[in-house]
Structures are given as structure tokens and as C-alpha cells.
Length: 135
Image (cartoon, rainbow, N blue to C red):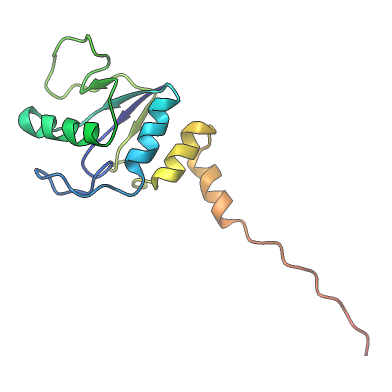
């Protein structure tokens, strides 16, 4: 599966143009996705030195992207902000915001929807039946 992931607000907290602190478990789950043979693309508005800083930050944490701001490594540089070809886009600006990385991973690994994940957390615990007593 081809997965495009934004950087600011998705892998790290927003502090653009600086690099914010890591969003909990972002790099852990991105590494797992790469280990499971997904093609992970860094898809960000960062360019030039700011982009190189983000790529280096990720490399220091063991993340080597399939491509950066393009659909595949051999692609010629094209439009400055062209959308890449991906099966899934992970971005903090999507409707509903960014789920935590554990839920993102479950959605991809187990082909779950937001509704599946949400219902797992909101189903009430079964209550034991009360015993009726006759007085």
C-alpha cells in the first residue's frame, strides 16, 4: 500500500518553520508500516533546507521514506505542490482531525474504518444481571 504522510502536525507538533516535538508513537508506527513493506511517502509543504531538516530528523529516528514530495523516487521534479499518488493520506488537516497513531496503525493493518475504531471504544460494558429477591 502507498501511504503519504504529512510532517508538521502529523509526525511532529506544529512549530513551523522549526521542527516541533514528536507526536507520541508517530515514528514507532511509521517504522512498523515500512517494515511491513508499505511504501511510505513524506508529503509536506516544506521545501529546500526546511525539507532537508525534516528528512534528516526522520532519518535520525530510523525512517527512510520511499519518496519525498513525489509519487516514486525516480519521478522528475514537477509542480511545486502537486498531489502525490497514494492509497492513503495521513494528515492532521483531515475532517475529524488526526487520530492517535495506534488507531491509525490499526486502521491500516486490520483494514478498519473510523467507525470500527470508534465503536470499539464506545460500546458499553455488559452489566451483570441483578438477582431479584422476593420479600
